[in-house]
Length: 193
Image 1: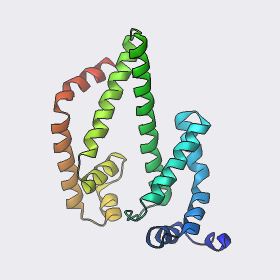
Image 2: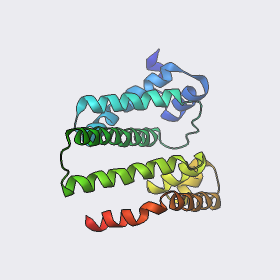
Image 3: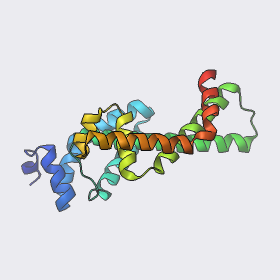
Image 4: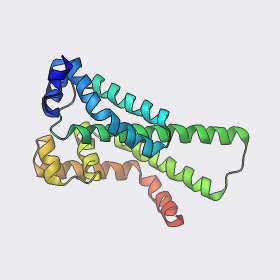
């Protein structure tokens, strides 16, 4: 039965997964994209088991959130975006563990480690600030930061370019307010690098 699905393009499989909860279509998408995602995750993490776990988590999140998705772009790009977010979250969690371990051991932190921890703290604050944006606004802003043009974003989300500009402008205003106390801090970190 799965052989039948191998003839369908990704777009049709996506429709079957998102609208009909088709597990066989999901299995086919998994087979098509898992190897490349694991390869990408291994390059980013350097650890095969961690990479496989992160990819598995990506597909679980994809399946659990399938009814919310309105995907009009390349599924591989979408899965890569989800994986990237999972990898960033993984690094934040690892960094927290490192900070706790260093604090427990009362080990003095050298300048390089301190700057890396400061950068990670700032990065985490940025991620938390992004979560405070309205969903559509956040989606548009993240796509804009991934290098998509206004036209591409408008096309993929089926909104006008003016609306895209408005969302980006709104996101920047909110982020400036959220991170205003840390802007000087960020400049100090950047100038120290």
